[in-house]
Length: 326
Image (cartoon, rainbow, N blue to C red; front, side, top):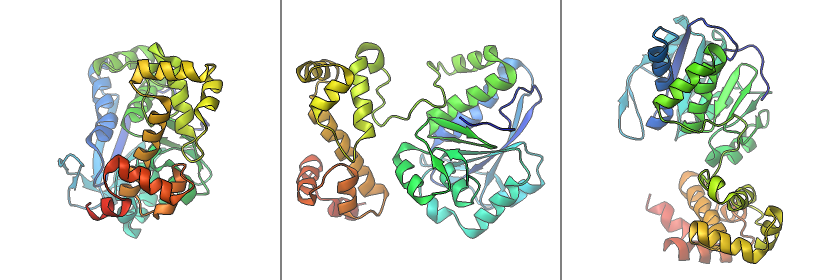
């Protein structure tokens, strides 16, 4: 991770954090920013963090859980003494990136030391041109689109990335990792450990740990080679290697890999890999406007007819019918 002067420096002074909350972000992502600050204040028995919530306008926003969140209008952020501004976002990103929002975000950004993008918040910062020339990440579901959309940003699949004065995270759990890192840097390992223990959060991941589609964290302890095989599958959805190649890369015979997958997951590696690819195809069908042919190619199907058959067998309907039923 590249770093320069930002709030991630040893400094015991209290930080004032602004949090811009957009419609259709998830509750856990917002909590991952707010609750570590609250817990740090409580565990330290003094104010290490203060925070204010902002929304794009005077109207409350609504989280994906249906919970409304009220805050100060973003236009007010310029007048607030903030050290950092974090943007927490989830869905409908382009629709919410209005000219007014982007202008107000740029104005607020000029007055803070550090900018943060949580989940889709990275997309919003990039749309405002605030990540140009920097490393950044976003949720793995949007990472490829993010990389293609913002050529001036170096997109990484890390859990969180600190680059220049910007910090970006891949979602809720990486945001918690990032906040614990902030507490550790500014106030020491002991306090960070106490805050993590308050959430019974273990292990804490490094920022450059890769995001995972299948979350094989528990497998690493009991079936590490299966977990490694899954990592390989995740990284090559568009050009899927054969199971024999995957087995060789993790140091097993094909038969041993099959046995290991059955023992750990109750599935063959081939069936697991196909399900992983089709699951990503379903997400792309629901969350993007990509043509079916592009979805097929992105998930490793060179023949659209083969993709159509596999998709219908898995989900009982075609991509077009799935989209029509949304």
